[in-house]
Image (tube, rainbow, N blue to C red; front, side, top):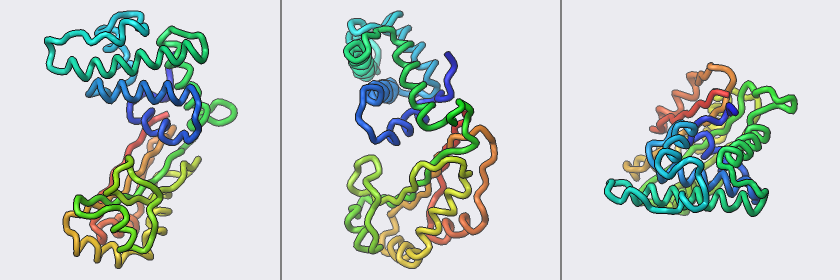
Length: 243
């Protein structure tokens, strides 16, 4: 059945937002791992078609865990993807007694759509998303940045020690531009320290990432937000997923 979660990165973000520990999250994480290892995966449906063409249709616990096509350059990564798919099917059989690959994927995509993207009536939200500001440097750890700025990181971006981040929670019915404004409001008291940090560490990278799922097409940042990013030398990274 058609889904509103259509791409690898959309699913990647939603799984990361789910802080609970349960079988559907585990199976979705295994599909994310498989898509990442497969490489050049954007559209989930097309990538699943690629899985079936490579391993066989239907996909099973047995045929996906076989490293095939060793004469091709990327056979090892394809094999790693297959191992994740095999484990995903195995987990579904253990938890739900369901082995059909498409049914498994339908189940957790539906779960994440209901959890994050739809209203209680099953209608798509106008907007839902979050913002992240990060500092990355090969020469500084997150702890170093905390000492410079006097503010603790909200967490490690991708569990990498040389990242410092601030993030907003996933927020419903707020346009991406407003998320940017909220982040700039948090950063404004740190403006002089951010500029001084970059002056002392020219290789430090600043970025404002805004991730939005939207049933609309508008995405505008106000001049104040853009001016602030320019003054501190930060790049804007936005991802918009239509729902």
